Amino acid sequence: MRGEIVCRGSPNHFGSMRCRRTSVRDTLRGPTKGHSTSTPSKRSNPGFELLPSGTHMSVCPLFERMANVLSDIFNLAVLGPIPRDNITSYQGENFEKFGCAVYTAACMSSLAGAGSKVHVVSHVRKSDVAKVRNLLSEFANIDTSYVTGDADQGAAIDLVYVDQNRRKETQTGFMNPILPEDIDDLMSCDAYVFVPITDFEVPLETLRHIKANSEGLVVFDAHGPTSGCSVHGERFHKFWIDRDRWLPYIDLLKMNLEEAQCSWFKGEYSKGELLDVSELTMDLLPQFARHCLHEGVRALYVTLDQHGCAVYHNDDEGRMREHLVKRILVEDVVDTTGCGDSFAGGLAFGYLHTGDFVKACQFVTCAGAQRCT
Image (cartoon, rainbow, N blue to C red; front, side, top):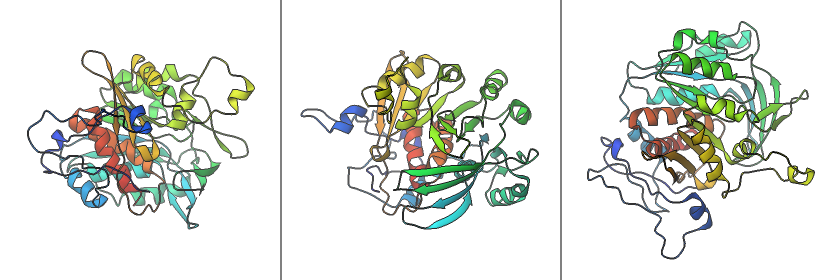
């Protein structure tokens, strides 16, 4: 998998990172005659600058250079399952590891300045508590005291990759929900990063509890409410029917096009239409984004696979803005499991540091690329 964004410039000026911003639809359709796909920055001091398509550099030094800028001290929480993933890569390799919130926590640990704290909130099987805590203890700044196994319930999933991005999933273990009482003494966090993978893991009451008792930023991955599990362990996409009850309690909402389709639905479908429900079309994406922003979401991030990530937010005058942050060049994709979870963690850090929705996405694109190498 190869992408098109890299950065250059002084690592001391992350705040002046510049990006080429263009219509998502125009980018996917290709440039039109007379249409410029870049907007020069008004800032004069040097910063990370996007290079022309086809230019690339090693992801690891790039990510490390940018991460070195984030010396702020933050108090953060990662909330979600830590499944035992049995993975078969698209290259036929088999391996087992703990996933989801582990990836988010590891990403945030690498970004956290000295004195920061990343609290991991999850429920696992009793037999896995020590294993997970020991694994997470290898990373700096992580608090594992909220990883518990009192109910002896935890997620377990078989993942078989068809290609770099598509996979078949079978769920054999199920985490009990993360409830308000699990996080009562974490109300002073600067950000709460939710990475559920199934609809029952994080109830709405938990987000409401945070908004009622904390000033922290809520970053939410829509993978959870758009995914269900059958009694046969089959994981499937589902409509996020009660979406509008959730949106007022989410600041930064992250999803892919399939999850966007599950979140933007008609009042009624014909049987034929339901057979063709897959990904939200680019023409409908701005409509969906406008609805999310109207309902209280501060920014919507929709990942577009090889095209990068679309970012939607309102400007100071209340007008919706649409930006495209293109993907990072990655020479050798090893494993894309956890890239979305790393994305969510990096998004929180990027926004807390810059206060800019697009710059946060630029940063997190690097975090996701780092994860798959």
